[in-house]
Image (cartoon, rainbow, N blue to C red; front, side, top):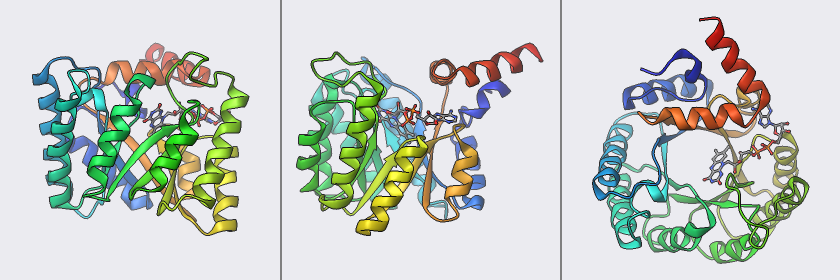
Length: 278
Ligand SMILES: Cc1cc2nc3c(=O)[nH]c(=O)nc-3n(C[C@H](O)[C@H](O)[C@H](O)COP(=O)(O)OP(=O)(O)OC[C@H]3O[C@@H](n4cnc5c(N)ncnc54)[C@H](O)[C@@H]3O)c2cc1C
């Protein structure tokens, strides 16, 4: 059980709770991207445990009409051990997802993982196009990465980037990251041959820009936001656009919850109030 204060951002500890949340979202027309919380594993057994959880989730999702996707972190399924383990584990997840027609997202972690993540994506997406990968606008290399991805099937999720990176590889100033985000959005909507664009942002300015680009170029797109963040906007946007909510669950909820609380003063105030009023 997670405490009520954390349930704004995390669906629960079990798959049943995540699927119940997905069911409630589905009633509002919002799609779900399920993420089993976990990262930075250095033990094969820990990685295999989560690989099995994802495979079970794929089988269970396939038996419903929820149309939920999954999103996996490379360091959760073996990249912290070695690249071969990561690929083998990703392959096992993709095989089960393909059997059930489940869409597989690969999250992007820090800069040391970008090459291995994109290589693995390229390896599997050519066999199973129901896949997507995340790219980060803060990284200087992203323009080139997008050109590489433009030649592949699958979908790209553009985010600003959640990891603190050094200046030599990343834009660290918020305005510069926003500018990069807009530039990459334009590329994805206007030039990339990718079927659809996933806008992974809560920023109303970036979402507005995506809507303008969709109107100008007709490229399909979806808006992706996190559970517990701007849910009022998610409910409004779904009236006109495809909206996906990223729904984390699992035993390792505490570090994820702490990150959400610390990134925004309002979230911290909300958490403190909930704890003090108990
Ligand atoms: C679905 C999804 C998947 C992601 N996957 C990855 C990943 O794989 N790798 C990775 O590095 N990062 C990932 N991220 C995180 C991402 O990189 C950013 O760190 C995060 O989304 C914050 O940037 P932002 O674009 O949402 O807006 P910010 O720059 O944080 O905020 C811009 C504006 O958005 C509005 N806003 C933001 N948060 C709130 C809020 N809580 N309440 C009200 N208004 C708000 C405000 O107007 C704010 O000024 C993901 C994000 C999402 C939504």
